[in-house]
Image 1 (cartoon, rainbow, N blue to C red):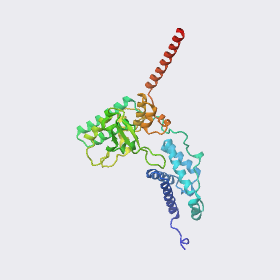
Image 2 (spheres, rainbow, N blue to C red; image 1 turned 120 degrees about the vertical axis):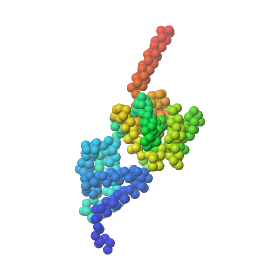
Image 3 (spheres, rainbow, N blue to C red; image 1 turned 30 degrees about the vertical axis):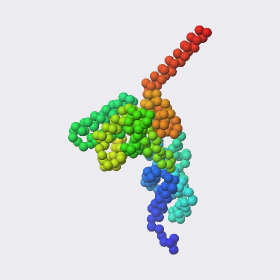
Image 4 (cartoon, helix red, strand yellow; image 1 turned 90 degrees about the horizontal axis):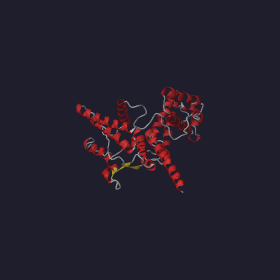
Length: 358
């Protein structure tokens, strides 16, 4: 009797069931909520763009959508691949006969969903590094100019009597800590006052010898990966102490960088600040918020720190990942080459002297 009753707007109901079922499948895989929500939005954008329900998708629609992303939206390679990955996973789910959507769609629409995202019409992932070539670290001179400019902005706003000096001060400190410990933004924004500890092997840093990162980048279907980052720059503890004493105040929270409304700072807030400062200083393109992390690894390597130590500080499981950040400066390359050549000449001369003596 129930099956004889006509279903009102079956297309909307079936699509909703598909999205809900796929969400549950991803929850069962232990994926992060943010990842799941982002993938669902990608599917909804694709549906809106092609104006077709999933059981009517074709490879031609995939290629049309991809062409629009590249020519009109000018998305990054990683963004395009992210769309393809999410949509391919969704179509694999709805076309799997174990879930029964093929039978439902045949009954209501006379067709069934099928996989339309193939290796030959989607962007492959063939190398670990996906960043744009123009992205680079700050030079030491640029880092110094940027931090000085950020401090001057705090002083300027404070003297003007306008609101905003505390936010400017907070953002300036966040930039310095991002560089001081080589942190990603999500690691930075989740820092709390209890995440710092003494390093018994480096007592000169006082209570800020170790930074405990609790929200490190997670692997697929896994929780955030924690790590400890040792303090290496002597100026870092003073920055934190001054912020706690004169900037952060006592908002009743353990968060190191609370927002004006008491929550955590969103990434776009700091991105806009960094971008504006770089434009005001006339820096070239390729510098952004993540450049602080690139600069941290680069400057440690230039200073002669062991690559394995830098790898552990960055939280990389493989040395090849740290190699992505090896943007050593031209001056460092020249000095390294010169030292190697001079050493070779000295060894050759020493051997020649020994041969002549013998």
